[in-house]
Image 1 (cartoon, rainbow, N blue to C red):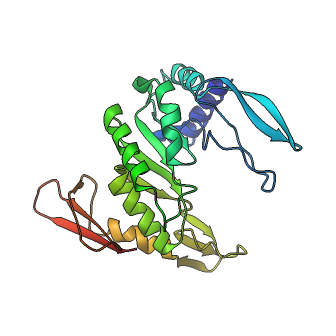
Image 2 (cartoon, rainbow, N blue to C red; image 1 turned 180 degrees about the vertical axis):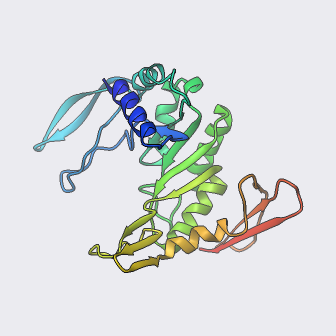
Length: 251
């Protein structure tokens, strides 16, 4: 049923002219919202099984579907679509959970490893953990994509650096691209806040522009080092080897 839903959704979007390059089967498959913040979720364990959850103060052993079985079913259901979207997985809430799902994934069906950075404090980033993630990407021969995170301007700059440099990610996506300026908080973590009168550029926009302004698709990261503890440095080389951009962040 899940696979049939995916196929029907992709066909409906294609009929409207929307054809994705990548799809993620389930956003935050390792997440269960707390009782204090009721939100929609759909949890998948790395493979089908049970997990202990708390319901009305009592511990309950609950059965959950497996991400690996869902992946197999979806891949089979969309195999004859043209084009077939590439698949990213597991797109977990935090980067540390990727290692739990990876052993169960059929990498022949996965084009990129995706993760989020929720639970990561820009002032206390687990750099060693991100480097372990980068090693998993290299061992799996799959690019790493940071597909969802939100923070303020400085936090975004710091997290983007660590995701791209220590985590070896090839993409950093901010949640959200746009937000409502009329929202109670004014959408400070969106790149752009919009209302009926126009738009306002928010701080995270400038942080991501810090990288994007003087790099282009196809540029690659090369080694960069610095001696100051609070300075984060990265260097990016043009494919023609005739231009180099150094990005500095005062953390």
